[in-house]
Picture 1 (cartoon, rainbow, N blue to C red):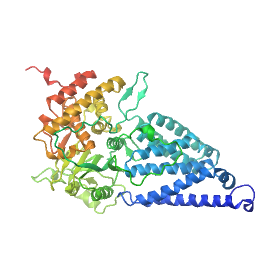
Picture 2 (cartoon, rainbow, N blue to C red):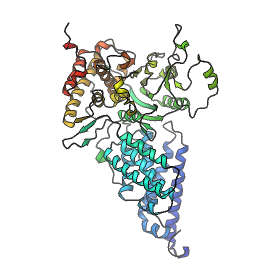
Picture 3 (cartoon, helix red, strand yellow):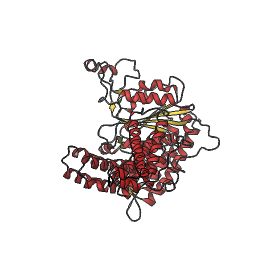
Picture 4 (tube, helix red, strand yellow):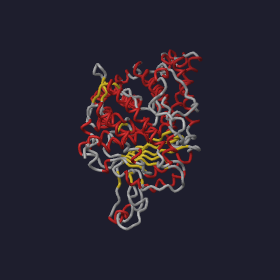
Length: 571
């Protein structure tokens, strides 16, 4: 204790306050550190432990508020220590969001991180000659930025990045540390992340308007009377990012970041959910209704890790539910000519997508390199997913070898759909892949993707809103065409009942129709998305009604010259 006078001078009540505080502080640190040992997969194992941890932090936070004066005088409580407790609570909420996919917990994390900055809890840290305390402050900034990115608070992100940059400069000047390059890399990564969107929407004052692309009221075409569709619900999603050289921040590539938002609802009345900064609401261990499918975010997983998470999701998938697997990864192509020769082609003959090699030490790799007839082992082949088709499976592959998954098989009669990206892009668009894939952009924000392929980098908000209205009309027509089409594979209709999957299928069709009419993409059929099972083209991606919508949108944006218009052809 660092209070004034000797310990004997301290009244018993105040001594007990300090003792209780020390107990709660130690207990909270112990529980928080134990979170690292919890399995990252499975829905059940972690909840009671998280509940206990939240309980202790609730008590600790209230305790330091009620006894602040005694703790200041007798314990020597510093403001950065209060900041550390608030930062840990923010981290707890963020990890609760990662575990549950409930966006309301992101708001709670934001509330605590925001309070730390508003109340300058870490302000005094710079005056102390302790580099480890400054690192705590820098890490707080990095975590706060991640939460702001996920809540689309881009203006605040830019302010925080500027502050973080100044803090890093001060830190590296004062302490001769070895981690200067690492922190500069953090700054570069977040700057690239913020600039990744290819299109800016501008209001009348020329200020950038931030658009949310989470699922909102009015975006998804409603089911109409007489539509016969399945009752399946998207319950679990694996979002996997393993692209070389793609913009990333904090183990999230830009593709993963976009896809995770495409699988979340916009929180209802964000402002109303924001609690007063610094007040602690203990999250309920069982949210009343899961608004969003549960997600696992896997950045550059090894094959072992990917298969472990896939198996856990498969095992815990409820009845009448769907597992979604999103793969944004570098393509792995077959080795040796033997894969293409002969008549028999199996699910391991076409390659697949890359899995990480760093953490997998596999015996026999040297043997494989000698024998070209063996298959690539650091690769997720289509056949690797076959065991999981025992339950409804929805696969999205965004890769230079996505077409390997065209050779899929439905072995068990459960609904299976694979949406596959183009494998070749026009030369003029290849340099943009670092800022995220065009295919994923279409699934996340079709209008932004449409503007991007038309070379438009900014748009007035009034025109954006008109274009969105036209896109909503097109989406409704695509939905009706899919459900009315007699030759469509039933798997599409089985998935159509779920709002998230409905929107992904509709956006896939819109993407396909757009690229089929775009003059640059028409030169090469590998520039078109594909699917397993195939969609009946005449009724969907090549339907005259949908082509009319695409050309109307192009005319509205004054880019109709970029598109092929069959109605102008004269024979």
